Length: 277
Image 1 (spheres, rainbow, N blue to C red):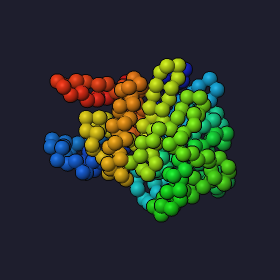
Image 2: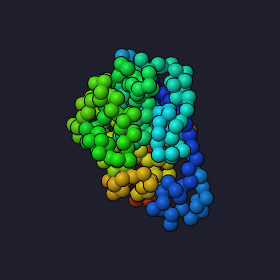
Image 3: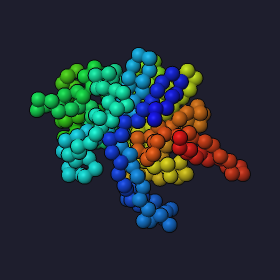
């Protein structure tokens, strides 16, 4: 069900869910897991759609169908109902005015494009696509992401649809959204803040993969490129949400995938907990 933040209506568009072993996701923290060595958790892959009076904005575009992704089952040659789910939520690709990308990993950029006449074309033909200039330059040089670049990024550039920005000096998009630097998971990973009618939200990209990281913000996933920076970014995002009483919109939490960040006190110490909505 859509959720309202200020004057915005926010919908989750699911691509797929998958089961992942906890120890495989956080292999550096086995000593903290004791009784959870055999535990499996669910990961969701989805987009967020924000509807305002004048714009429809998508944050991240999941994995995409029919992509060659090194035979990794979670990403390779998918055939999901993403488009049907988008339309069922009341949106068509032509409606979208902005696509904002938190970073350029496989499960966040795939529906940037769609196959048409044997070529990859922008899937949201009327949208401005926005990403970090640093992320783009890094992606271009990354041999592991060659096919991703060819099918999900280059067609945007060739069609004049991709705009790059300095995340540190992000402008305001649609009057409500701004990139916030949260590097670590990737070289210039960004979260996206929303402010509307006195209410706030944070779209956190891959800062966290599971709510357990609120209790253990030092836990880095197997996917984090710079682990010390990733930990700092998690703490920064938690503090921002507490300060602004903001909703936390994740990219991979199961269930509703969004919730409230609360502060609890234990004696002289305080910590954050996540309450799913």
